[in-house]
Image (cartoon, rainbow, N blue to C red; front, side, top):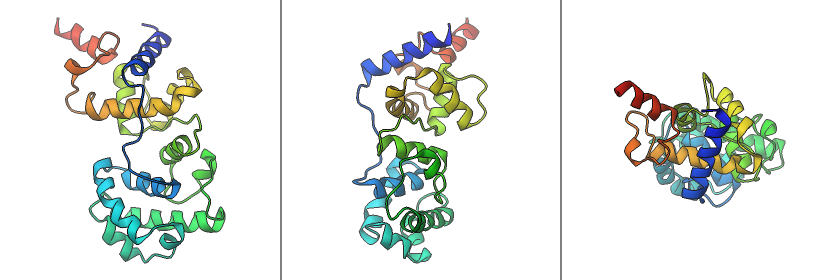
Amino acid sequence: MRKEKRFQLVLDFFQQNRPVAETELIYTDPYQLTVAVILSAQCTDKRVNIITPPFFKRFPDLLSLAEAEPSSVFELIKSCSYPNNKTKSLIGMAKSVNSQYNGVLPSDVDELQKIPGIGRKTANVLASVIFNKPALAVDTHVFRVSARIGLTANARTPLQTEQQLVRYIPENLRSIAHHWLILHGRYICIARKPKCGECGMTAFCKYFLTKQKTSE
């Protein structure tokens, strides 16, 4: 099957079966989403959503976080993965946005990546969700699912995956495509044992078709 055809089938499937897809992180403003996305690295959204309410009660804005003692931040996020690194990232992010951007998060992906704690994936999430930019973030779910279905080939890094995906996904669908692939990977195409019996894309999924051939 030609790659263009597989992409079209996948996008059509999601548009018909999951017309609404969005982040499962709970937030009310750009500051809260930035904190949540930084915390979500190698951590579940469920855990992040448990951590953030008391965190935002203690640090309701960028200024309060920029002036925070590291020990105070660590105490609130210690149940998250890599709390030491994330403590430094969160405080560094708040200080940078306050001092370099007058307290306003920039919308440009490249500019966002200059801020401590914000890598390309986080920058793409923020640009997409907050500023409606045609950015496509690649996390572990997107990386895995894209390869399994056959949307990407021989992509060894998230950047390579992103570059292959944006070649075939129209700009107006990139933001939601990120959520489609994440949610599919979280609930259906799970890492150790994908639930192919519950998937509606087996007719054009490279992984399923290959598995079917080898079992014959």
